[in-house]
Length: 98
Image (cartoon, rainbow, N blue to C red; front, side):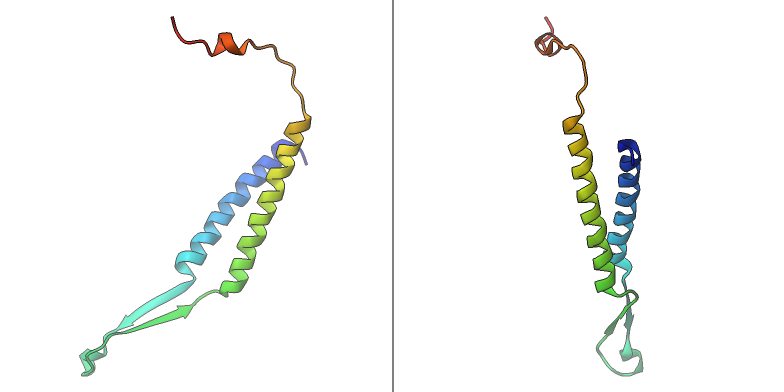
């Protein structure tokens, strides 16, 4: 895989990871509230129904996070061994305006 391909894959996986995190945080459960006082009782009842297996979802999120870590490390490793040839006078380039 080229570095460019890896970076495209990295972007795609980050988007998928964000979707899964949102799913884990917000829509993994469905909450409903019933008002039994309409039938005489004075307390409301909140019911939570799990829509996804949270352990399975968390395992997938963790798997993607670990892959992104490894991918990022490999990209940075390739950058560390790839040298470019450029001549630059840093002091002149970063000199203040006169």
